Length: 130
Image (cartoon, rainbow, N blue to C red):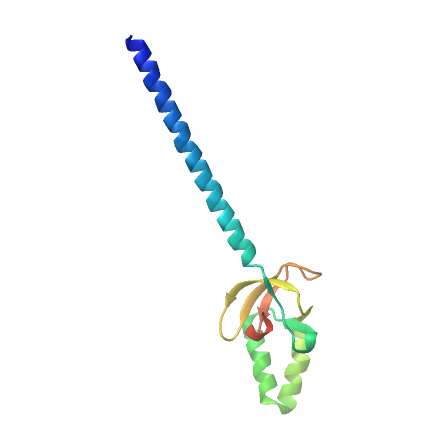
């Protein structure tokens, strides 16, 4: 009789453990789904260019800041800034999908996630993002 009671207790313990493990597996799957959805939602940004042209992606935030400062000064410095930015920056078509890595009032660090420039990493002005 003792042996029957012992095996019943073991079976009940196994059943309870299976229920707990099933719940844990369900929770892990739910958390993974939420993380994946969050990651995909973060990739829904695009580059926006005035007039629908191209956006210049700069190799560093400093280069972006210097080019904008030169353009603001106008005159010869403004023309030099315009010429220099064409040499330093990579031109990427508007509406290209990007992932925002970080953002400040002066610059946004991005990675291009689609199109011919996929994988390009750089900096753009915040107004160049949707």
